[in-house]
Every structure is written in C-alpha cells, then in structure tokens.
Length: 267
Length: 163
Image 1 (cartoon, rainbow over the protein chains, first blue to last red):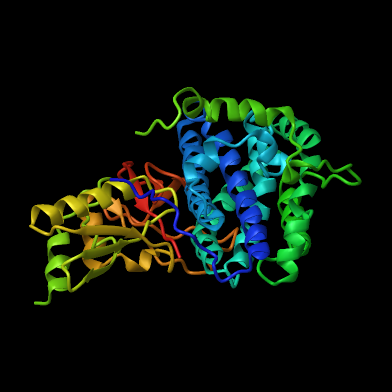
Image 2 (cartoon, each protein chain N blue to C red; image 1 turned 120 degrees about the horizontal axis):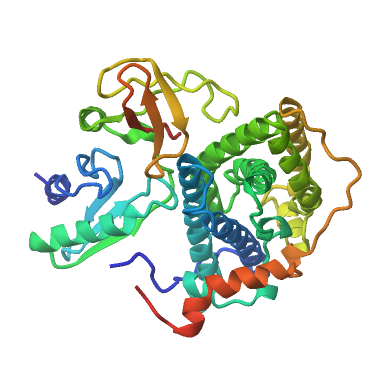
C-alpha cells in the first residue's frame, strides 16, 4: 500500500487567483528542498568520513520528506490530475523555481558545507515564521520541518567554524567556496512577485525581513571561524523565476531519467 | 471495551520496522482510531521525521494486522500536525529503548533550537556511565544521533530529542 493518493482539491477557501499564487509559492519551496536534497544525496557513499556521509544522507532525507509534503499540497492546490510524482519528475527546468544556490554543484566538502550553511540559516528563519501562517497546511509542514532544520543549521554552522578555523588547507578551500557561492546568497531574500503578494496578504513571511537575522548569524559564525563577511558582491538571481544555470538541466536529467524512459513506472 | 479500544490493543503488536522493540503506541506514532457505524476503520499515524522511510511500512503493517483480525475496510491516514515530538514516547517506550541499547531522549537544559547550546548529558545504555561524547548529530536513522561511551568505549545510538 502506498500513501500517495489522487490529489483531492485543496485551498477551496481561496479565490482562484490567490490559490494560483499559493501553488506557485508551494512549488518554489518544494523545488528548493528537492534540488538541495538531491545534491546532498550525491554524496551518499562518497563522504569524507562515515559519520559525515551519514549526516548528509540524513539531511537529504529530511529535505526530501519536506519536499513530498509540499508537492502533495501543490498537487491538491492545482486540483488537476497531476500527483506529487508528476510535479517532481515531469516538469522542465524552466518550470523549476528553486534559487540558483541550491543547484550549484557539490564541489569539495568545504563547498558543500558552505552552500548548506548559507541555505540552512535562511531555511531555519523562514520555517520559524512560516509556522504562523494562516494557511494551515503550510504552517503544519513548516512546523514539522523547523524542528529538523534546527539540527541542520547547527551541523553546518559547526562545520564552517571547524573548517574556517582549522588548517591552512581547510580555510583555503572554504575561501575558494566563498568566492563561488556568496553571490548566490542574495537571491534567497529577494522576493518574487508571488512572494510579495502573499506576504502583503499576510500568508507568508516577508523573506526580505529575514535578512538582518540571517546576516547576524552569519557574522557570528564567521567571526568564530576567523572568516570575513564578503562585502559589495554582485548578487546573481533568476532561479526563482525559472532562469537557471546549466547545472539544473544535468540534475533533472539524472533525477527524471527513470520516469522519462519508462513513463508511469511505479515501485 | 469499545471497538476503538480493541483496535488500539491490537495495534500494540505493530512495531517500528527500524526499532522493532518499540510498538507504534510506545513511539507515539499512532494518533487516532475511529470506527464508523458501517464498520469502516480509520487509523491516523504521524511521522517522527518528515522523510521517515518507515511510514509506508507502518501503514502497510497496520492495514495487514487489522485485515488479518477480520476488519474489512481499513484506511490509514498520515497527519503532520501537530508535529511529532519525543514527549510522545511513552515511559515504557523509553525503558524498552534503553534495554535494547539505545539511549532514550534527554530533556535539554536550555532552548533546543539554540544554535550553540550545550549538548545534553547522555547516559551510556550499556554501562550507565555519564561520561559519553557525541560522535555525530546524525546517526543510523533520522531519529538518532551517534555517541560513544568514554568508559566502556562502546559506540551507541541516542534517540535524539525533538521538540
């Protein structure tokens, strides 16, 4: 038996226009956790030590669990016949709404840690606020994932400190990762039109308002890690509105292969 | 005994596939049982962690158990809210965990969401020593962390606190 069922229409309490916004936003959150979860899962069996291999697989699992709840809700909001699996496996790259940061390649361990750290701080703060959403489904999913995100942020913060204040080699690698990844952090807090409208309606938190707290946490961890917070970096954007780097296409090629080659295949 | 109580009792025999000494009642995963007038049984379960891969197995086991007991129409629903917490682990469940070699969750002495809070003192389930160290916050399953005892040197799992 499985727990997937044909989506029952949800969000009937909203006007169609509001429901469409909510669908767009729910997909953005789902795509984000799916792509980052997939990236982390690429480490499975390749981690630098067994414990960290397990840690990354665990975090990937949490993110993919969150993804499933979000896609199920999105499928119900859409109210067509598409299921959570269709949303993950049968959409094109341009329809994915994840920010560019999460699709960046794993690189070395320092690279993965920094990507995770930049994301975790945002994810933690967003979920903390989203738990209070008047939309009960989003609030329930956020409350569930918030508890898990606390452990993720603790883990990636500790590793940034360990690598930054570690050896010459570990610091050099973290700085190299910073050169590549910092420019993708701004997009997390950049509101799309959908986000602006939902935030104005009080349904989701204003993600721009999370920035000061995120910066404070980053500054605190970087200080302990003997790293400087980069200044005046040009910020990349586009993922949230479907303009992706070429990396996403490669991720989807692997992620969607089975459903493309054998349409409708089930376990 | 009401029809619901009877089902709760039957479901004590359904265990967590990853920690077989715990029933889904001990774990607090079984949330609700309803029996409708037409005999339809509705069972509600909640995941410990979002991505817990045991949920499908648990749902199947619940269904099979009730079908084998003669119930004809059984539905299992997954509920996210309120989110599962280690507070729902029963005392009996905690005792069984420790006897099985997994340290039960310890109440944090501060805000569990604080980022640089102290890690709790976890007692070794094998020699009871309180001199243990955290090896990794992430262990063999989503719900466990990996510890090692500094006295008997055994590595062990700790069922981590989730609130």
